[in-house]
Length: 444
Image (cartoon, helix red, strand yellow):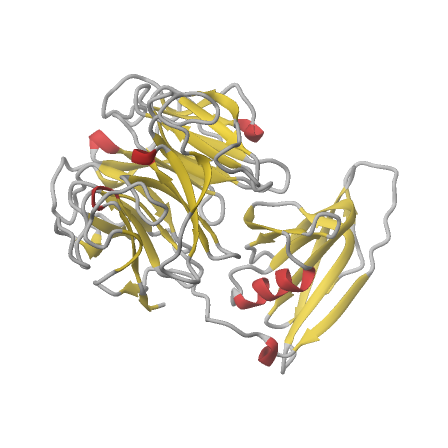
């Protein structure tokens, strides 16, 4: 195995987007999105439509998959890999310098680069948005799944206390942990209202590998495997990409009172992060394998900077800040930890930490957190029934949606998870209203 360090020289051109390809090589780095059962042209189109958010991809022809990357670097690390293609773009033309720096190996390599100029008129579809600190959303939501009136149910059009969510950017599909119905549902956002498909569970309440008791967190790795954390069963279970209600999962490991999941996708391996309410800790399954390693907390229940108190949310930001964020729920704060943190690492408070309350500098039972390209935090502030945006290094947050309890289109009831679709719309699992709400992006 060898790695090659390519220096990219950027030259401006007009009238199109230049696409370059390196055969039999892949980029080594942090994956933004993985796509399955797609053609090379579909992957290129997705990269172009991202408007620079995604600028590089690995395509594997043998199984029709690709890995999309976000990078603004002037250099990339490449590894030899047969039957694959490394494809990248810029709004100007990119050429690869011929001098290569190889790692310690006696092998030599020859790289062939081909380019194709695509006219911008070839790019079709909705405009994709990279959410930033300047983005804003409609204050009234559309119910995209579940009951608009907040009624729970067990049919394939209803939910019962939805908690975790995962969004498939390429296919515009949402996966939801329907906790009260002990199942994982998947449905399309293209043709709403849609009927969901059960992809795991729905076999009664229990802890067998085809059952759930209280599913909380869900995530998908770069191989399209589904991970589900079960709070009551204290375990994390893996399901294959084609799973359904008849599928038995595989136990990844035990985590007492496991809550939400975050997966750091990589071309080399995927790390699975899981919060443990009982242990006041966050665990990592390195490379998607056990045993779990402590990466935050684990020093008893408390509010010191090396402690957590009943954490629920976890988010590893491998795209922008390369840091671990934890919704430290009973401490009413968001903690940030560096990459490679351990049980001995002291975190920093990046939001809240001023006691429970509804003030601009406070949180009350925060459930989850995610990060945008500017480093701003988006927090599902449970008891305050709102989604807060907390800018990097700020001492106060701003309510972007919600703020009062109820079933109206501008209200929430104990929101648990928030995320963005590829158009920048805000999706919220409105837990006790038994619905998923979409707040449309108004300003990118």
